[in-house]
Image (cartoon, one colour):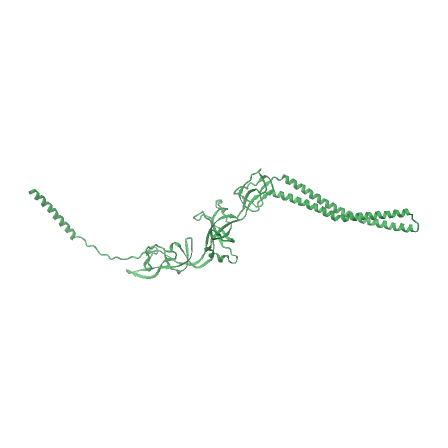
Length: 434
């Protein structure tokens, strides 16, 4: 019993000490300080609105195609005996060079034979001309002879009339006169035939010349020459191969003569309309579409023609761009047929236009502006946020073009402002400070 009371007393003492300690802690505690809750306006970054003139560029894509490409074919049959060393795919060729040639031995012999026929026909004409001159001289002699025979006949007739000449002498004189007359008539008849004979000789000469030209044309057709400076696209023949007329032996295309067919959406035609007035041709800048980061060379060009009809599938207006030449040292960056290019067509110029990044737009037609309508909050001047509507005339790539709703010098907020309210106070951050 005494030990139970002892234990009870110890518990009571511990409880009393704990209660005293708790009371002391409660009494000696620090009272919490009261702080006033204040609203701090957000700090934002701004960019000034600047107006100016902007070119309404229209972007399109297309594939490079050769303006002049030729399929090489022989017009006559034969065996290929010569191919130019540079006639291989990708090689450059010069204008006038012989690219392909078939065996010409038979054609050369035919040309020599035709040339002999022409020379013979010309010799026959020269001979006939000489015969014509000879006939003319013979005719003069025959006329003189006939005049003499006629005078002799008249003299014998006069003598015979007075019986001073015999009948035999008269007959002989008449015979000599008739013989001279017949000789003259024969020469006249030969002269009358000269024009016909000359026409015949000339026709023979013309026929021989035509045959010679035909042989020369065939000889010319036995080889293929390059009509322009260009590149070999396809080669499909080897030396010794027998080819037939019309068989495609290769394809070449002209250097620095490349085009691109592009298609402009109908809604973008409004930016190009005035450029085409009075025969104008919009300028175009072309880059290789697959190269990013500015590694592609830039080729100048211009729109040369508009196709006759709108594409029914895409509802776009097809146009052809003619590409100018650019000296590129890297052969891998040469503009070749089949390259996919990006074309920027320079449209009309718009004045008093605000060109701003698309990231500044809060909605398709809304901007956040910082107006210089100062408010005073907690003795600090702040600026008011204004949510304004603007007129966007065009959205292109990374920029939008605005014509109404902005004034030069307006501060456009570029910082994110979740829960923004029109008229709320803001701070503008300038040079790292508020």
